[in-house]
Amino acid sequence: MQKSTNCDTSMETLNSPRQGTGTVQMRIKNANSHHDRLSQSKSMILTDVGKVTEPISRHRRNHSQHVLKDVIPPLEQLMVEKEGYLQKAKIADGGKKLRKNWSTSWIVLSSRTIEFYKESKQQALSNMKTGHKPESVDLCGAHIEWAKEKSSRKNVFQITTVSGNEFLLQSDIDFIILDWFHAIKNAIDRLPKDPSSPSRNLELFKIQRSSSTELLSHYDSDTKEQKPEYRKSLMFRLHHSASDTSDKNRVKSRLKKFITRRPSLKTLQEKGLIKDQIFGSHLHTVCERENSTVPWFVKQCIEAVEKRGLDVDGIYRVSGNLATIQKLRFIVNQEEKLNLDDSQWEDIHVVTGALKMFFRELPEPLFPYSFFERFVEAIKKQDNNTRIETIKSLVQKLPPPNRDTMKVLFGHLTKIVAKASKNLMSTQSLGIVFGPTLLRAESETGNMAIHMVYQNQIAELMLSEYSKIFGSEED
Image 1 (cartoon, rainbow, N blue to C red):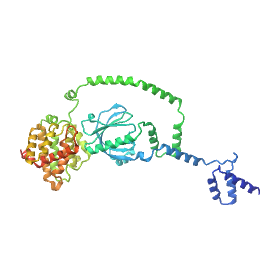
Image 2: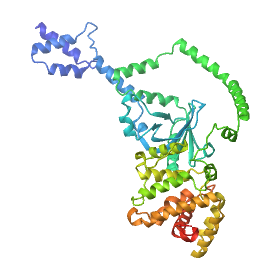
Image 3: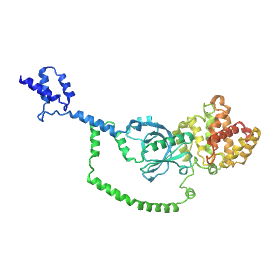
Image 4: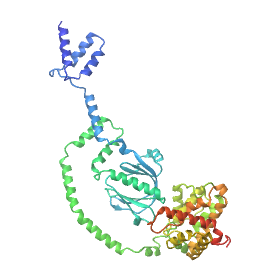
């Protein structure tokens, strides 16, 4: 009889609204006998006024779930918004200026960051077993602007981060670089200007394999009162930053003195400290150095294409591997001996890509800026014979390097057109490829779409009426 009383008492205690009712009932339901139920009921009655302690693991798990919800950024914050290849140059690291070196990078833009890979992200991630991580840029508080004065290349914009890192991004294709500029700008505009608050959440999210208990302890330790020595170091930094202004002024004055005393580019070139490069140099400079009116590199590329590329489908339209093209460009700039019959240049699209890149990177295009409007006016003429005669007259007035290089190039392209049945490259197709590459206005103040139409038409006419404009190919 005493046993039943105890059992009733224990059940009243367990059914109290203050206790873990669901847990206890579940345990009683799973008991195999009246004796087991009785013993389990007794085991839950504690000396501390009959209070049942809730399982610690359940409490901590619920707590950690709330913590995770608070500290982990939403998934859309880390989703990839855009990715692709661009030319990249890092020109400052933490405020320290760096030498500008362009390289091809696979750019991955997410809602908050940009990551730079040497190849596509999938390939890069598979190669990261060695512990190498991609360079990452936090866009929170960053600044983006066009930077025409920072490079002789066209379509260059600069990203400056709050940490003092500066990057230049570039593409020769107008619509691609415009799309990237607006995508990155929109990402920056959506982020808060102060990077301190969300960056910590992003860092915690990267602890992918840590348990909820570890994450909880990490979170709790951060929220504890700061130690006195930390406050002391913070006060030191605040005091130190007050003197930074005077230090910066001294540095600026020294830099100004250094800049005014530094030797000119011409002096450095005369002393042989800086070599003239093939890519990115003026056409007349390259020709003078080679004592020719047609650059040696242009001749060599044309010879290789005519030797093994006239029948290739999409010649000049299909892009070659950009990394290999950049390697070829580097070798040419270093004045190393170049053999385009070497197996590493087996893909003829690499050769055609390098030739197009040479003409794109000319500081002044093959059709000089001063002649651009005159060629446009000539192509607008209604009478075809008048158009041909006007353009022929303009070509004859060009500087010898421009005129002779133009004659060699368009003579080569007529051979491409002659094999159109095999390579599928018509006069119109080549006009679309070479028009914007060889002709462009000095300042794109007008309608770019209208200019592109005229650029293509001029290149097409030069091809279709080659013999009338330049004379016979044997001349």
